[in-house]
Length: 164
Image 1 (spheres, rainbow, N blue to C red):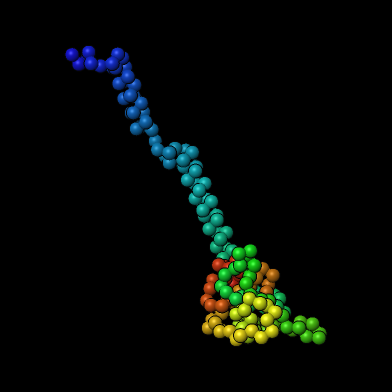
Image 2: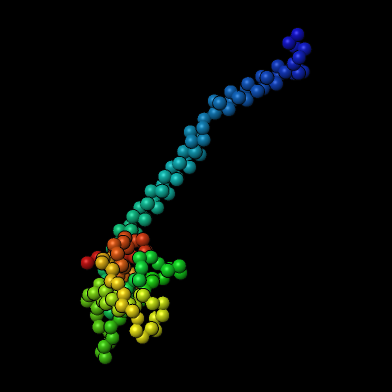
């Protein structure tokens, strides 16, 4: 009676399904195969290599080589186009440019003068500004001192830490 309700070739189909299921269950997972292990090893190599490169770039401190210019940043972030916000300060003399020995004090004077309070760089009498309490000294790729308001990590701004 049970045989009459089954499809024709039901036994054959059942044997095929059991063979297919047992074959798939006994197959090793993708990470247990050779190409899976190569993929995992290659991924680990890429992660370790990029971490090493990032670590070298983050820890690469640099000295100030151009003492005639100081980049005073108006905020602790870059502009949308990647440039540094703020102003570059250079002290000129009849014989040429004067080396800026105290870059932080120069930028303090820039902040106190109100240079960063107004959007108009040609404003003849800007309102006095508030001087930040702390500054961080970084170095650009050109060897110019970049004074950042606040305590920040120079690598966040894609600048080198200052090597004093």
